[in-house]
Image 1 (cartoon, rainbow, N blue to C red):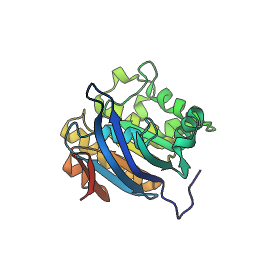
Image 2 (cartoon, one colour):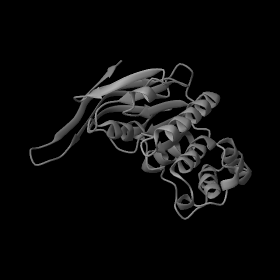
Image 3 (cartoon, helix red, strand yellow):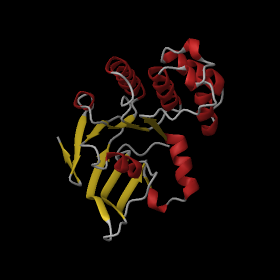
Length: 228
């Protein structure tokens, strides 16, 4: 699925999120709007506790806003069933997390092949090998995550994310668990692959130098999102 050229990949309009508490509700943010075009890279920065990861969950359809509307790839997600939304994510959206989120009992190769199989890709084994080769892990096909360094695990996660040719990629603090040198190499790889595939990238980070690599930078602070 590709949205018409005239329609952005992601449109969030006046979204708010409130969590119930003893005093009636905690507003994380109010009336946030954001649009992401095909191939665009956007960094969302802000202090810890500002709600960056909550916002990402809403934009990706993993959580539901208290109010407001979100369209993903031309689909109003509030009107989709859970199954339809899950299929939309499986076919067109990928994620990279700070904690890698690899299945611990599966090899590097199997972690990538599983994502391709879920998507219904043909020749998933060879495609998985090609992607591990791309991220420099040809000698690690059969290693499980516990046998890989943090940087190698994140390379597997990047390969898995891009192998499914996503229209939209969400990355939440992708270098947060890595040392500075390893993190820099991971980011170089992430942006190189993103440019090659022309994927829309929405990146959550507290790292200003990482945010500078994106075409647009937005700051989430005191419940508001401002363009920098």
